[in-house]
Length: 116
Image (cartoon, rainbow, N blue to C red; front, side, top):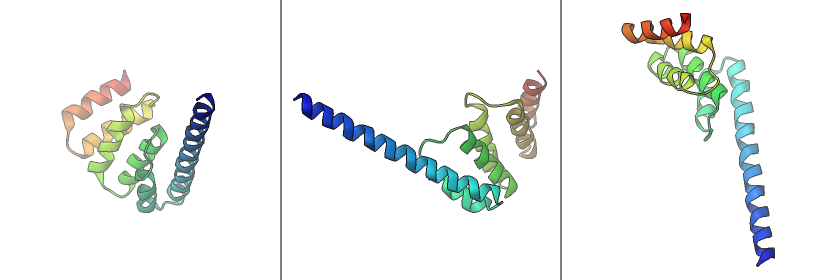
């Protein structure tokens, strides 16, 4: 019984390591595309990552912004400011995207948050 538990624990640990490695590889590939201004391809890679951290969300927002898809940029910018660790620059960008999308009262609220 004890050996069976050890084997199952080892198998689950190996699976977790493999999943983290795959996510890291996908993010590295997406980051490379993003840094080479291949925003459409980067978006595809970023969206395939199951556990999106702050940098993935931020790069998705910026990629959509650079492709002039302001609705999607707003969606991901909102996700950024709703994630722990966002920066004042993230707040400003979200407020700016809201303004582009003609959501003026909401944009003003976020600008007030930015200026504190």
